Image 1 (cartoon, rainbow, N blue to C red):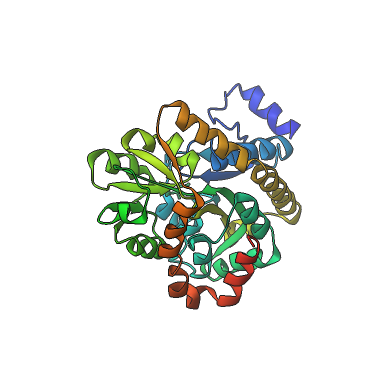
Image 2: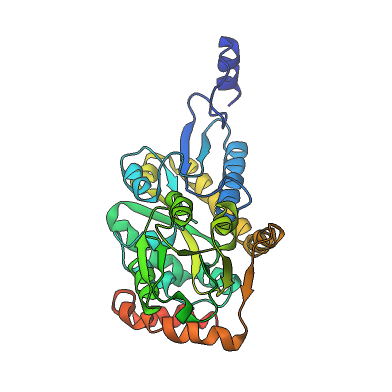
Length: 328
Ligand code: LMR
């Protein structure tokens, strides 16, 4: 508010806070692990901060901590319940310690495009899945799409057998582990910030991620090339704690949730374009992208898709069928 600004100015204390949080404002810290810009999540976080800082001036402010500078995705969940951070958006692959329902999103070849994934994530059914986090003290506020995943390794991957015997970094997801093992390869769960070093030193041979993660983390520099498999979705659950939401007065909470919902909608419309740009940037950096013909891609689907059955009990056959229908 104007009066708070006036007090701050009259004391002549330059505000050291990068987001310009003023005294008396509710501080919303958003911690994430990816690049601060040029990435669907990094850009969404920045846009959200801009909107909150402009529209909630005097009431609330947002500070964004990108690049695992504050917490990695394991720690951020604990920090949130301790009240040290108010907003996070871990990949849906990272919630299995809290709910097994979100395993849905890791099923290989569930979504044929970002558009199909976005359409499902905007549905009532997808909202219901986030409610499975409530028992743990979290509130799922929405989804951010990131992209479809591609494989890379220290050798060319054309046939699924090319991956046989290699070790791939995966997120903390048993679905991802099962998927890699279906390729006769081995999986190693590693935090995102450790991936580049692990690829560089040969701790792992390969990885799988979105175009923008491969580009902004420079994974392409330490891999033979990237194979365009589009085999799995990368998307995020935007979460806060019940305790934080309850601490806001009704008007503030409503304003915060409205800005958040509108911003996520806007951010999700830009994901496909951002991914295309990151893909082009990888080509511009003279890295190799191997496209697969439909005939070459088919065996990857055949090998990995049986993983669905293994996790059907956790997720629910009806839930899988509904989500899959968006790509039909
Ligand atoms: C990963 O660990 O590969 C991703 O979850 C990182 C991210 O947030 O996109």
